[in-house]
Each structure stands twice: as structure tokens, then as C-alpha cells.
Length: 152
Image 1 (cartoon, rainbow, N blue to C red):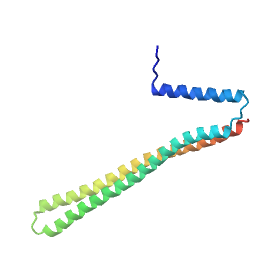
Image 2 (cartoon, one colour):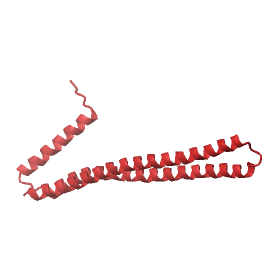
Image 3 (cartoon, rainbow, N blue to C red):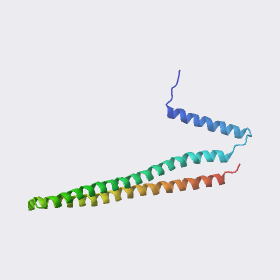
């Protein structure tokens, strides 16, 4: 009867086999380099957290860039509307002028809303970044403490 395992289970079984081999080697008197084992564990955990930190940092920069692009677009639209208003002021009815000025005010409101939205987004990303930086530091300190406690 052939038993088929999922890839996750196969990986877990392989890790157990590796641990068994390491324990056997230790029992047989082969000297294990603790630094290598802890360094490998530390690198895997810390690399994962570093990737998250890099991703969040990149997302913060991309959000700032998007905010700046939106501001530039809104400023460009407002400038075009104001130029049109200046050029056509004599030909427009007072109601049309008021409506056009209302559009400019709406654009300014959109800029204010975007400023607030960008601040909220960046603030949330920075909070997440701080959490991952704290986790990174805690794991790094934990591994250092664990290495110092192990005596082979």
C-alpha cells in the first residue's frame, strides 16, 4: 500500500528526519556546530521579516508618489479651469462663472481629501512597519540569548 503525502507533510517529515540525524550524530559523539544551527534558524526567520519590512517601506514610498501624482493632476486641472475662466470671462454668464468656480473649489476639496487619505494610508503602513521592526529586533535578541544559553 503506497501512502501519498502532501508537499507540506513531506517537508515536515524531512525536517523531522533531519533533526533525528542531527540528534544521532550528537549521540555518536560528532561535534555539532551550534552557531551554524542557530545562524541558519535566525537567518530564515529574520530574512522573512526583512522582506516584509522592505515591502512595507516600498509601499510607503509608492503611496507618497501616488499622492504627489494626484496633487499634480488636480493642480493641472485647476490651472486649466482657471485659464479657461480667465480667457472666457467676458463670454460667460454669471451662473456659468459661479459653476466653474464651484468646480475649482471641488478640486481643492479633493486635494484636501487626498491629503487626508494619504496621511491615513501612510500612518497605517508606518504602524505596521514599526510592529515588524519590533518583531525583527525581538527575534534577533531572542536568538542571541538562545545562542548564549546553549553550551556545547
